[in-house]
Length: 321
Picture (cartoon, one colour):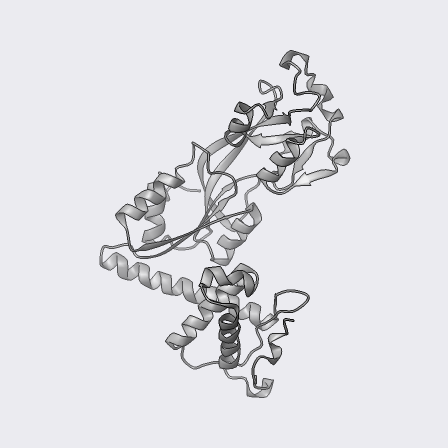
């Protein structure tokens, strides 16, 4: 049984807590482990990222707690959680490593060479989007700057946005439903979504001429929860919708049951349509356009690495967001 880390070492009492006067190489290593554990959501989940065993991670976190004199986290039956001190140390570690990256950027700029970490958050299920230049941009960065370490994460919209705010991602590629003041937005392209039903649904074999748009409200609709399109309300009654999903793939799975209708990106649904498992419902009249943007944290310096990535994505950072 997992136990709380509060007993993992002989932590000093509050009256004896002293922050280290200087950070050693070992302190940096321990803080990197702690940061990885927090971002993975726990000790077990961090094993693959750190490529070390659970016992080693536990000892390193214990060593960090003893080193700085604070209890940082707990794990047990209720799962992994941060203490208030742990949250503070985590935020401070993000700032610390961002400062290190800024130092590397300045040195690499002086040496006319790109080095450092390029951490990017991308929304899920955009792999087949032919409008996206992400793959070609990453290829270009890899070829032209082999010392750059690419860190690519595919997540839900709120996780990508949170990662950019916290500094875990230097950039995000997301659909934009409403703009937030924490970010600068750089337009990339428009993604089209159509309304679909699956084989077995009563609309599946009807011709477009026989489908009355006004009757779409009578069918079970899947609400894609983070896709906040006001135009969707023209086709369904929000108060009657009882089925929802967070990811594009989850929406597709529910549509494929033949019991629901819902919106999917055309590029994602194309193969399923080709296979005869989905059909678009009145694509001539029922569709949504979603802008995709590169997001950067507002009012933060644009490093040479970010500028190189933006150039590869054909995005002009000088353009006013």
